[in-house]
Image (cartoon, rainbow, N blue to C red; front, side):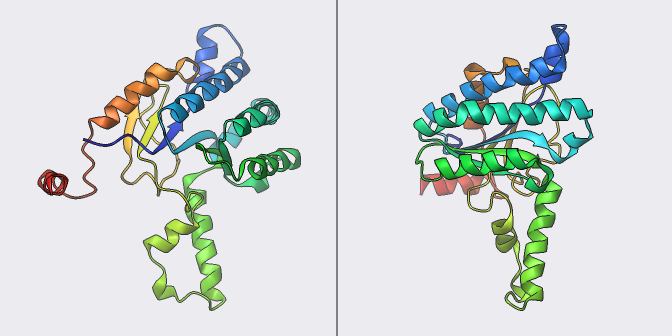
Length: 243
């Protein structure tokens, strides 16, 4: 059986459908999701999760209607304004991953400010993926390695999986143990493509605005009953556990 997950990643899906099912505009679903994030962060901290990575806005989400994208950017700004001080008081360390060149100047500034404020906190590491895509992540890592090779500071023969992993957005923290996706879809939607290679995946039909501690505990229970082999056999895992 697996130990408790130390790094949990979540694809927060279903905001629009939740709003539509209630006869509300889509922005209502996105606004409701902020309260859920707060509850999930608190519960993960109580369960002694070390890292929580949330997929807030993908590189593909830019294709959505301009008014919805603008509303989401404003929602991020408002959330940073309201939530960062409380996160800081609770020793949460906040990090953002994604292509910041695509974001507005004010949002990028506040993200950087939030990271600086919470950088030395010793509690939960909260990672928010904004304007993020797994393919973008791998490409930017490859470009970084290629630049070093072209400059003569990195022999191409030395480039391997470990070096590439270090240049990814999550290069300084362990890969996720558990991925949760809400909303009923069974795909990873270009999220952490490299890092999810051996992650256990839990899919639930519950829409994100209805997700809470009980659903999170169900995902943790699913994870606890998984046998994580990483390419080995069950016999090998059992022998190591009994050694």
